[in-house]
Image (cartoon, rainbow, N blue to C red; front, side):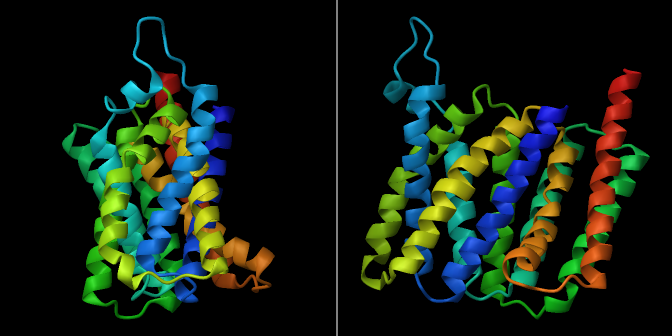
Length: 291
């Protein structure tokens, strides 16, 4: 249990860092959305390709890594690509608060609805935890909400749905780092098409490229591999609710690294979100003990 908590915590830190890095790069105009997305995915591929020989075990009689790559989940690669590209373009027209609300709202709805249709029944404590976390999340981002652009809303909704599906796909990962690496590698044809279609519009400077590389290699490549590792010990509702901690962590990062002030809203929102997550985890823990 402690291992899963640690892995989940590291993954949420990576997600929060990714939001900050993406916003810094795109809001400043240091790089365009297509170039940022392409460099982000290529950097993730590079770091995971370096790790792959260390973690991917090929049993006797199995095909090598190169051949295995084409036997993996193409669906996960498509979900990953759609999330990255939708996220990048949506943030060109959305404020941070409303973007986070649309993204994580879409993630929650996708994962919870699929779980319910799949026969999962949530306990009262889980519903309470989910409600607390959602209320805390909305309360945190409410002051920054503005009327979203229709295009930005659609793109971020698609990004959230894609990420929810990508997360659900990861619950069946036998070798999380290997599977994450193959997912990233299989986005290469899509990245190539994207770069070809947007080549004439590409613009970036050193800062934008460095932010994209950090987002891709550290927050995305390593972060998503850790997330797939954590998912082996999380139920769907736990995986859905725990992601609502990301905006809270990002806000805390603003306090630590950007000199922002801790106010009453941040404290109340943090307590609600973290309390809600705790309720969900306690419910599942009690259910496991009873079983």
